[in-house]
Image (cartoon, rainbow, N blue to C red; front, side, top):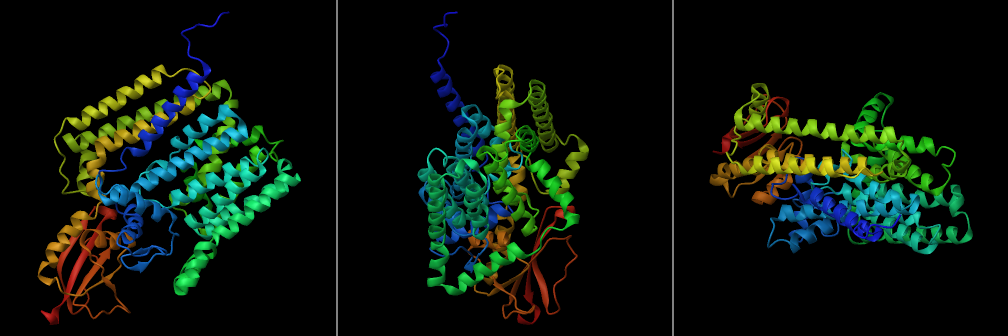
Length: 549
């Protein structure tokens, strides 16, 4: 049969597909990244070291409000501070800082896609990127100031480099070595443990890497990783040995602290089940299908990386969702290897399940908006009012109009999407992007009001107006609140020692119901600020010594 001259060529289809995927990734990453204040939790906490670097502090060893911050090495904060400085004329500092999250997430998506192509062939490349975007646990962290994204990206870089080793032993090993060194600069000892063992494990267990050229390349890559990875700790040890001791003690305590107990395994399984959805069922199918070939590099490499990441999570006993980000690249690769071989019925079920799931959640988001705008349904409206009692919904037709446009475009794309092997993964990624864009469009003002520290600190500054020259101490202040105090008001409270302080003013933070905590004898309260409701109530309280007035 003669070819239709109007039909697009293979090259044109690939160009269109790459352009569409790039547009989808950009829309997913950039929507909701800017236009809001640093939010309570990780977003405000990890902005602290970036702001300190912009003030010329903590350039080599991260700090928050003048105090060392040993939780992460500086790789993420360096890029975040650089991007904040470069975009300072067009974006607020906190918005510019979040661009580092875009950069590292985009790197992770790219390297996961490239590694998938090297391991499973070109048909797996696009599903790998789409599955990464569609991962349920990534969406929030990809849009906050989050240094764990840098570690996730470097894990993906190491896997991509090791996937090149059979065809390009030297180039692939050196790329993996550079990625491992950067992983140490992104995640400290955890980064080293996530990546360095892969060189030796691949070299000793995979038949694809047992030849002299591959083994020699892997040893060279391991040497590069070790030498370059040691540069930052060595520079800290030579310039500020007390900070090196603090960092090493913090890393060791994190890795040898609270190992996850048997009773916590169900919580870990629950966390994995929703965070890695929809990757884990496809990954298990892929491993079952390849059960007789697990020593081949294409299955062994991501499987070893996933086991290393899971082992570190269990060793740390950290059951927070962000701890699972380094697990995402290998699980996404395993899932990508299984997508081209899904049975037709399973692929169709996955496709329709995704469409119906995102449609239901889109309806729920609209209901949440109507509860704010029209107080319907009444029960949900009362719950929202209890959480944010002073929030006032702005009457504007723009947000619902944009929300309707987003839903319409999604319906059209789902309707017109051709029935290919990647349809289910494309629908899932588009559904996740639609849901995130709709959430940002309709609910961003409410989230920003409920999670920003700016109202609290603006109110505190007014209370402090008669006491500008006074010393302020603090107790119970989390890193996120200290970061916000420094950013918004330039306030750096001192810590109390043994419950005492020479300062006349004491700023207290509690996470409990108002009235549960009273000032100590000799103090009385001159200012309070409550945020949230029920079990989510945060309280700031400013006390002054009674005998000093």
